[in-house]
Length: 232
Image (tube, rainbow, N blue to C red; front, side):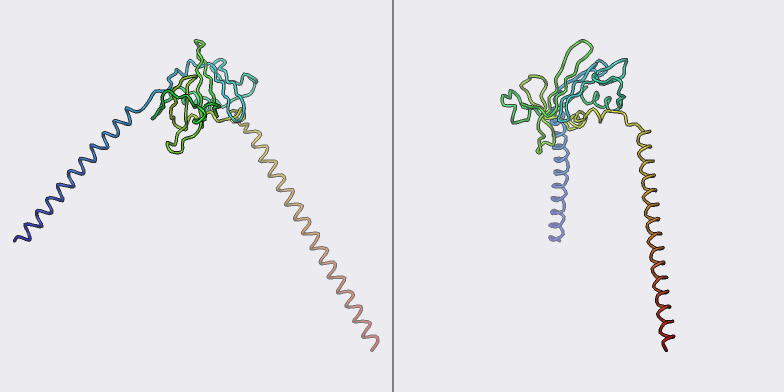
């Protein structure tokens, strides 16, 4: 009887510990979520429809994009057709930039790769205002990039999407010509067919040569045999 009571008490204690742990964990997760939401910093907010120009400098060189009649073109070559969907993604990524961490009153920007940024985006809006977005080094610990707006002394840790969006060359933005792709594929097919034909012809020639050699050898053997018979 005492043993059963003891087992019941142990079960009740374990159940109480489980319940307390369960609700304690839920509360902890809620606190962490609230903290995370509070630690989201607004780095930049723009109206993408008001953006009229984006000057991009990265390891691929300089790109100057301007909006003409609601179509984005290269300032250096307006005749080149650009992928408007790709540029739309750029606009969405620069329109609102947020961060989950920041470092205030920075004086040494070199340690964050911001003394010489890997990517600089200068955005001009219809009112003539310019905003410069600088992207620096990648933080392995945070899985984010260091970012600085203009000459501000605050450095933010931002998601990698903006780096991906603006780490492009002018050729990456160009519309891919499907006709050229088809032509290249056709050329490849023709070249493959020619190569196959040449190979087949070579094999046929080799086979013919081998057959001729065999016939010659047989003829020589027959002549030799006839000579031997005459001798006897």
